[in-house]
Image (cartoon, rainbow, N blue to C red; front, side, top):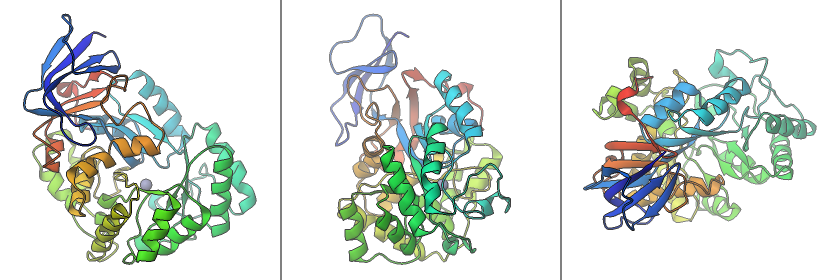
Length: 401
Ligand SMILES: [Zn+2]
């Protein structure tokens, strides 16, 4: 792979925009930010545009079409939070050899109980291959099983169905605590699915490393925010999903956007336009207020969408991360803070030091956008180019998934 120079481009350095500089891509990494232009380099004119790190979606359920779609929207890494090894093991192999797919990390299966979440989303079929846990003594075996499947981190589902319009048997607190201990003994983070204050408190009691959603059943209290801040855990609020759960149809606006429409199939546009609507819309305000309070308290907030399969209404891979950024700004984040939530912050918290920032030696996962997303977050959708490990995506060659 030869050198490419993104010429006269303003760079989002995690804090602000630089003056226009030349950024050199050498193979799969960033060779230089500023400095001279190599004679043999391919020149890409970046005048008037902004270069940002490729975006990281910190909560998805990935497969090959998902990663292909995500990349067309500048999402260069998806952090999968529950999938089967039957999907993930071949997917990792495909990602290693294809420049047309976003990179991926995964928890493999999430820990649940027999008939627990997410089996109700699978036609109430208890997937015979989905391991379940019924006692704390099984936590170690669960953790080792997932690590054997290649899990980068672990996930536990604390879900009684309350906010999802149903009733489900939830993993008991002593099992949550046991899996967090077992994961930490193996050097892995353990992340907790929690959509209620009660589930959040179970995750806090257990010492989980992060929350993969945000409670949406009640307003926050100062005590709860202080407890989360004091724990050091990070939060992936998935405002896109919480909007869908509360009947908002933010995805419909996104589906109507001319920068989104041509990239999605009719099925995904339909999926994006719908919502779950399990809870009244006013509860979404609880989530916005809680995210703002967490941010003010210094909690690391990571952008994630919970984009999954068709039928998980209100989200689409890649596209929805741009809506997540918009919703973080709606909650009171500055555009810069929202961008950090999709770049440097997830890179730091998920141990991905090769990405999430633009500096020499970093992986050349990059997006070039028209305009200035540090003042107008909506500009992230105005994509002029996407690079994945130094390879520019040929947008013309991609057909909607
Ligand atoms: Zn999820």
